[in-house]
Length: 361
Image (cartoon, rainbow, N blue to C red):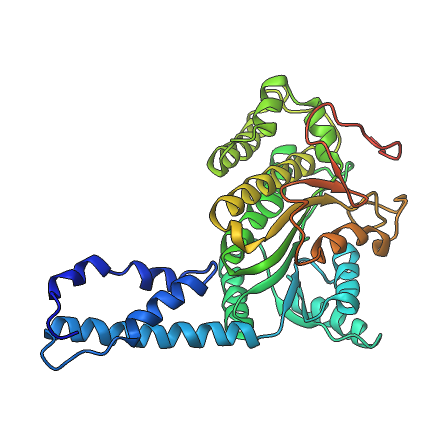
């Protein structure tokens, strides 16, 4: 490079280096950084330029090491709230069909490890990691584990949720606050920490419920328009979820347009999860289009679980079919994305949707 005008260096800046260290598609940026790193400098090069060149060389080696680690790391699928019910059945089916490691997570470590042992007795080999989606530190420990062990995440199934039964005497506003904390804000926190780890062709499945369509139908027209808006932001959605909790504390939820139905806190929290899924899918399309990550929400059906009750028309294994279908969409699939599915079929998200005959409400 002797004889060149050294003042061109500011034009290079750190654009290529920054891109090479990003989380999206790396090939073009890595090549750019590699080209810079391959340049040889003469002894007459200014010290500042020699120092910058050394930094780029080091960064390029780090990028290559990261790419190699991610390429060689096994695939990994993770299911939250998986020590029983549908979550357990999802892990069971993924262990049989997914070409990589499957991580079963549970809030209670003893129950989670017992579930893993049960699956091991069937000849399956899930891994266990503790996860309380209400605890940000717990989520971040899991995030660091995935980053270290696998360099990212291939499949995420957000299944963890709670519900108060209709006869539960707990005051409505407390039910609303507790349910919203786990079902909406806990799921959102998991997405905030783990979506940046999703690898190209990753799959994200957020477990929702048919009750969200029932709730949407019975909301006021004003609330309906907000929940079906294609431009609603995550901040606006968070505001609506917080408003619901505050409205129940004031006892004005019906006056403010919220539906009058059974399992109201569960319904609204899952409505939030469905809309959050649409928002996150939209963001992925804008920010990581080339990575072909697909994110959807789904209803497993009326399943015989702690949440669905003993009268459900499906077994947990049957309830796992749609989420597993979404988790295993082919790598070249472009859709569904940002949709709400039941029975492996996309359903209209809106107040005019048709409800299936089995709906018990």
